[in-house]
Image (tube, rainbow, N blue to C red; front, side):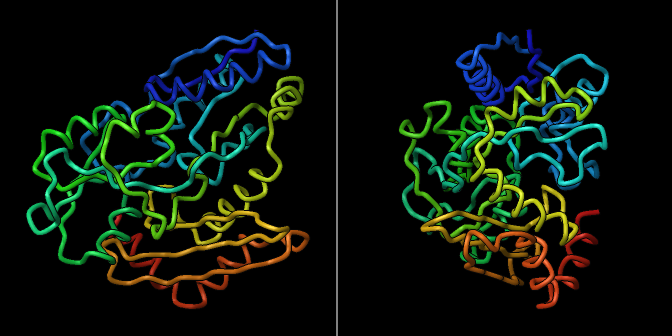
Length: 302
């Protein structure tokens, strides 16, 4: 029986059960093993200020390496671009919606009355403040239901969430929201990644049967971009690749933490020429001034 490692949050368990169902369909029994992450234990401190890579994934990495679990299920946007040398992402499930949404406070009237939004993400904060520079932001941490409860009890105008998380827990239609298609998503947003040990070829072979090749291509472009600009998962960096009519469209941006500065790079390329797209786009954006901006961001995140 395959041991599936997962965080304890409702969303993480939903994602792990999706993998369990996929494995059952191809003839493999599995069992969930819930493990608490550092990011779940500390719900006050902003993620970017913790100074630790993989706050949501490290505990699962340790369980994998110690043979406590066979596979680990992740929201790919939380996974560092450099993994422990013993671990690989063996499969990427087909991507769901990559965009963010603003969920409005039930008492929201307009932004003149409530000009504050909640978010624990530097990327979301930077892009919102760039578009609405007179607004204010408040740190918002916790699982989805906890964050919704905090929003509902607050005087904020709204809070930003990943659309996919609300959809997976059937919470989207319970709330008044707007989709933020102008906001560039985090690399890997909307994708479930499945990690396993490289040496466990039998397990890796099984898991690779669940892989979506198009999603893998886009995910690796985004993650290669993020790694090349030397940004972590919590940095104010957006990267989103998608495939349409045999072309790959890739949008990227680096923002200052308050959104006042931003460097964008977009590319459209034929599917067959995708090799190295993430790295090439990173070099382009770094040449445009991204290197200096990344240095500034890193000094502010210490």
